[in-house]
Structures are given as C-alpha cells and as structure tokens.
Image 1 (cartoon, rainbow, N blue to C red):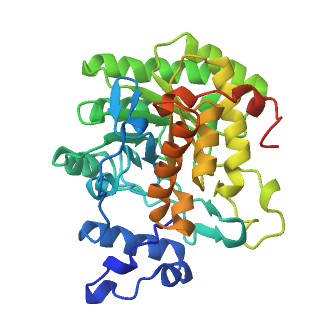
Image 2 (cartoon, one colour):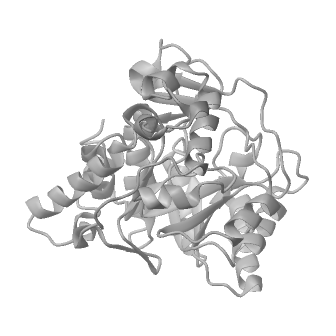
Length: 369
C-alpha cells in the first residue's frame, strides 16, 4: 500500500512528479517504495499546531497526544517511524517483523480496488528481520508512542517460539508490542487464535516479557472473520492472563463487500473502506466481552465520522492506513479535527468520554449493518 499526498514536497529530481494520481497509476508496491523513499529523505509534512486537550488519551499507561495511529504494514522495516510521528500520529506501529528476514510471497501481491477504496494484499510478512529493525529503532526517538508488531517466519518449525523471540528482542525499545496472529497470508498462522494454541501463545509471550523485566504493554491482534463462539473463547483466554490489550481487527478473507469489482478475486486480506462495518461490529462484540480491556480499533476508517464510530463502538484508540492510499495525508488532520468537533458538540471535554457509547448498537447490528 502507499501514502499518496507528498506531491507538494517532492522536489528532488528523482521524486519529482509523484502526484497522488501518478502514484495511483503505478504498481502499488512500487509506489509504496517511492513513498518510503520520500519519507526517508524528509519530504513529508509536519504537524503545525499541537493537538488539543480534547484528544489527549491514556492507553495502557501510555500518554498519547491523540488517539489516531498509523497501523502496522506501512513501515515494515522501521525505516520511517520518526517522519510518521512528526506528521501528527499519536502512535506509530512498525512491522510486522519476523526473527529472520524473509522475502514474502511472489509478486504481484498488492492490489487496489479503487471504486470501493479497498486494498487486497498477500505480502506474506516481507521484512528484513529483527536485527535490522532493532538497529534502526535503537537510534530512533519519536514524538509518539512506538509500537512493534511481531510475527513468525513462514518456514518456522514453531510459530510460538518466534513470538517469544520478538518480545525478547523489542521489549526494551517499544512502547507497546503487538502479537500479530491474524494475517491470512502465512499458512496456519490464524490457527493460533484457537483455544489451546492461544493459551500457549499468550503464556509464552507474557513469560518472555517477564524474562525481559520490562513491563511493556502487549496487545493481541485478531481477525474480523471469527464467529461469536471463537470470540467467546478468545475473551475467556484473555481474561485468564494479564494481556494488556486487543487490536480489532486485521484484514478479512471475505469478499462479500466487493463482489464483481476488479481485483476482488485476488487471494489475500481485504482492507480499506469495505472492511469498516465488519471490523467495527467485531470490535463492539469484543468490547461487550471485555468491558475494561483497552482496545485499538482498526479496519476501514476513512473519515472523521467513521473514526468517531469506531470509538463509539468501543475503541480507546484507532489506527488507519489503507484510507491514506486514496485520501492522502490530509485525512489525518481531517479526522482529528472531526473528533475534536464531536467532543465539543456533545458538551464533553475529552474523546475518552465518547468511548463505547454505541457498543450495543454496533454489536447487535442496529447500526453498521
């Protein structure tokens, strides 16, 4: 995927002409690489005014200037966390990173569904591995919370052991860690969401944190394709641990929302606007099961209204990515301004006062259907 609003800032000859329309005409992965290059060269907008008090958010003991984060998947190798933070994100999540470098799945593996503002990817955790990301992050300080999304190598003999290594490696650098077991692009990975496998996984991950002697918050990222029985089982398992939070959700394997559109039949996970209703309903259903657990809502946010809806469904904070492909970086400011306006319109003083006020409506399908 690709950010697409750098055209006023791309002054170097090699990057000239990278308007949003030009980027959208490129192969998606090529365009993504060009955008990463622009960010590394410092060619990115920076936030002007500080965020207002209405947006200040506490999440697992982390003080965020605002509750809007960059989701994992954009900065896979921890190359541009600082530029992203300076744009005004309240948190930046890098990765997914695996213990060993891996090339990911064969290309092409990234596809836009333009009319629906959706994206299908089957990247396959392509990344340079723990050591490359660690070396970069060791030298990085950012004005936002730093999340590290950890995964398992495709050819690993023991996926759980890979997550243990991820916690060990990044506990000292990350403000929070995300255990990503919900990508559909690593065969067998989503099986870790089930019963005994999840119990073992969380046991090992939290053991690794204890061994590291770092009380870094740990989040679990789940799929939107789980039925209510699976949600019950996950909630029960979480309640038996001291897991810090949940991220709902990853991409979906469903194509019901984009039937008949170009690229809709490509294998992989669907993200972007078509995912919004499904992921938000699952978020609300998990909020009902876990009333006190911090939850980050991600999936299909594309406007200030959809960001607010995710919060009202039960999210303490939110993340976006795919919408920036089509809406550009201005969307970040649009969302933050919209959230401030919503807080004021309700006569409240902080966005936290709007969290979960429509959970039941979303969970039971009275809205978002």
